Each structure stands twice: as structure tokens, then as C-alpha cells.
Length: 128
Image (cartoon, rainbow, N blue to C red):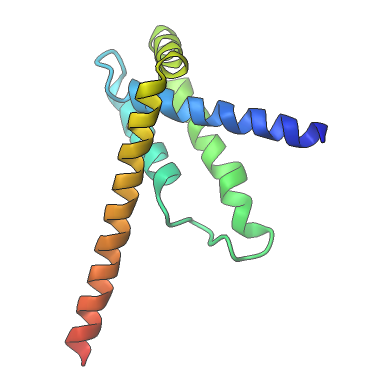
């Protein structure tokens, strides 16, 4: 039971870090290289497509357990300390902002899936 509690805390911390990164990418004090890495990290975190598909035993979740935290860590190292501290504070304090980011993320993922489905259907219709 203790393991599950620790895992749940880590997951909540990871969500907060992702929200802080989404705030840091909009901050003018964040360097361009950091913004590029944050953009890649957020795209990968919110993407419905994994580098290694989840249905592959053991290796399927490897990217979620290793690659994503590694990308987050690299993004955090590229952000100046005062910017990161400010973004972490805002991410933890503003519940409305967290819900807003979650809603935008969900809308973005839905748009991606609808687009991919439409492309597949159109290509299928063209081959008939």
C-alpha cells in the first residue's frame, strides 16, 4: 500500500511539473532553447501516439516511465531558476488554470484524433 501512495504522489508531482512547463513556455524570461525542449516534452506528454506502443509487454510502458520523465528533467534544467519557481508556484496555486490547461489539452487531443480518423477515412474512400 505504501508503494501505491508514493506512486500517486509522484504522479501528482509530475502533473504539476507539466503544468509548470506549460506556463514556462509562455514566459518571456524563458530562453528559446528551453522553449523548444518544453514544446517537444509537452507534445510528447499530450500525444496519444507513443514512441513504443503500450500493448507491447514491458517495453510498452518503458517510454512513459523513462523517456517522458527524462524529457521533463532536461526541460527543467534549461529553465532559469526564478522562472521555474514562479511557474511552479502558479501551477500549484491556481486550480482554475489547471482545469483550463486540462481542457485545452483534451480539446487538442480530440482534434488530433478526429483529424487522423478523417485522413484515414478519406484515403480509404479514395482507394475504393
